[in-house]
Amino acid sequence: MSQAPGAQPSPPSVYHERQRLELCAVHALNNVLQQQLFSQEAADEICKRLAPDSRLNPHRSLLGTGNYDVNVIMAALQGLGLAAVWWDRRRPLSQLALPQVLGLILNLPSPVSLGLLSLPLRRRHWVALRQVDGIYYNLDSKLRAPEALGDEDGVRAFLATALAQGLCEVLLVVTKEVEEKSCWLRTD
Image (cartoon, rainbow, N blue to C red; front, side, top):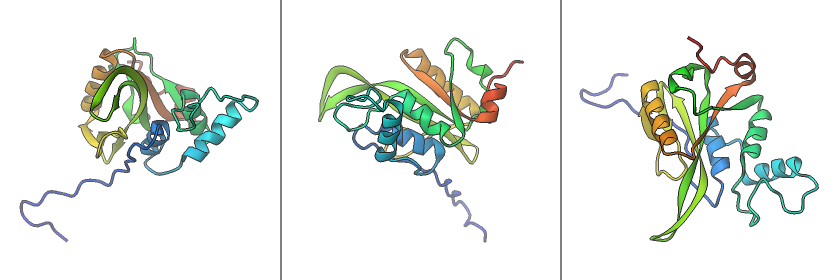
């Protein structure tokens, strides 16, 4: 079946969860994996496994609304046979072998607001980046829809901007094999 002249091809189907409570880590995991594999309950179970004897679990919010730390993300990925590799910001982004990377999860400073009032506080926010059908997308759960970043140059530019603003951490989501062989890193 052919398209009508001048019709735009339909965009690829990109899985994108929107922000709820403080569940950005759960949303970032599901967005980077492009399906709903994790829930608040699953993340809470990981927290209990990480700190079984702790009354106040250090891996999540005291209020029980989420705000999970990097240990929860790493354990969730490990449970799927994947790994999170910390990207050393001192390396040039040209050394990042993007074809070897399933996706990226960033931890960024995020402004705090109450309605229209912006507060002088900063929280941390997890954001997923992922390639779908040759196009990289910003899958930030605070966005209404995925934001196309383009090709490898586009995602590198996005990362460069985020890293230049400081306080940004980047995790590469890779297979265990890619982690063990360190082939997420270009050496040429």
